[in-house]
Image 1 (cartoon, helix red, strand yellow):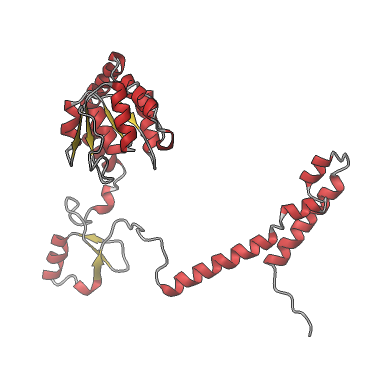
Image 2 (tube, rainbow, N blue to C red):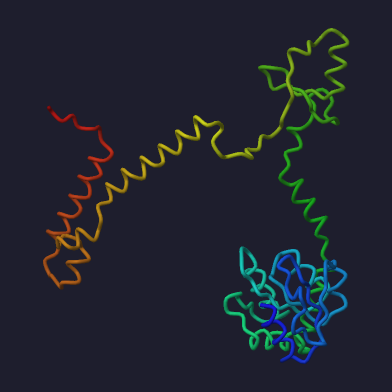
Length: 283
């Protein structure tokens, strides 16, 4: 990869700042051209303001930093949503089409860099950066958050301006810390009769709760897979027996209704055997 990158830079005739990254790219600087400077850990939002274009993997944060700085971008994706962000950059005209990691060569990388240096790409990237600068992302994000936040369920029933912290057991009466302490001081409430109030529950753990349920779920999944595999009789065997619809079609048989019907009946019978009660075989 290092050799490929250096060769692409030679073809463009441009100066380049190359980040070594966690992969140690060009760490030994063997064969490094004079117009290449190897970098360590440098903040992208500062660095991208001092270059003509950027080349990276297409992560959401790195892409945002490059576009915010108004720099055309070459994306070389290899995982996850990187291809998506590369396509979005290309659609906006702020860079060429993304080059998948496995298809990267010195020639197409050099061509992509030269594409970014064209005035049209530079202008598109600057326009996109200006559009982003006018957006109020934090305000819109806060509005979206509050839009889906059911504030009324978070209020104290006795003092609606305060957040509910407690709930009276076996009721839906919500109390703030102030209301609960006031009622308790007046002898109208026993702290044993209240519990912490959670306006919303979030299931953050979907895996089995303990070794017993984990083992049981794995066993059930295995048995279910085996039974369904038995029910789905291998199609290749049916084709060999000339009772699979595809085999009939390939043979050019005109009257295929009868063998096809046999295939469906056999499939249904196997499913009933697999999913039904186990037969008792007499000794």
